[in-house]
Amino acid sequence: EVQLLESGGGLVQPGGSLRLSCAASGFTFSSYAMSWVRHAPGKGLEWVSGISSTGDSTYYADSVKGRFTISRDNSKNTLFLQMTSLRAEDTAVYYCAKDVGGALGVWGQGTMVPVSS
Amino acid sequence: SYELTQPPSVSVSPGQTATITCSGDRLGDKYVCWYQQKPGQSPVLVMYQDNKRPSGIPERFSGSNSGNTATLTISGTQAMDEADYYCQAWDSSTYVFGTGTKVTVL
Image 1 (tube, rainbow over the protein chains, first blue to last red):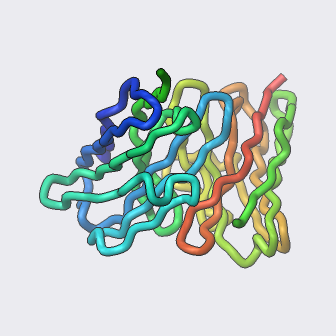
Image 2 (image 1 turned 180 degrees about the vertical axis):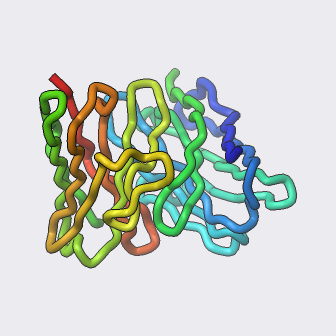
């Protein structure tokens, strides 16, 4: 069974940092691009960042460019999102998702990141 | 940046057809996907490449895309279809989500 399991969320103060992880299982992780998507309370889905299957190419939404860094460890089937200079508007549930040719075919259960003092 | 616009809400009676639109500049030139999200749950892909259903998605879900508008149609809507729906397209190496539509089954 294909599974994605996020971890690393939790309360963080404005200006702080956090690293999210996403453990993948049930598929050949190294063959697929991956993305992070967030869902802020009362708002719609927002794509945050994506990474190619090899990790050579990375992409970011303008709202997080320069503050967030996506990476992956294909030997450990794990996706990461390093978040720095966090703001209140970054408060959201963060999902990792498997890219299946321009669509996000499998999603994790999400991890909540509240940014508040 | 590219934008996709959806109506905030759509209401439908059980057994009737729900139509959800997604508008964007020359959207018909791109592939569109649709996601269903129920409260407290992760999104689920219900349509990809405009009109293809992933395994396990009921046949009552169908899609189309032409011109500036993509459409997700739910025929014979059931109570279980009540959810938020988001369209999504790929533009300039980024995913773009629509504003979302809440489908209410009355």
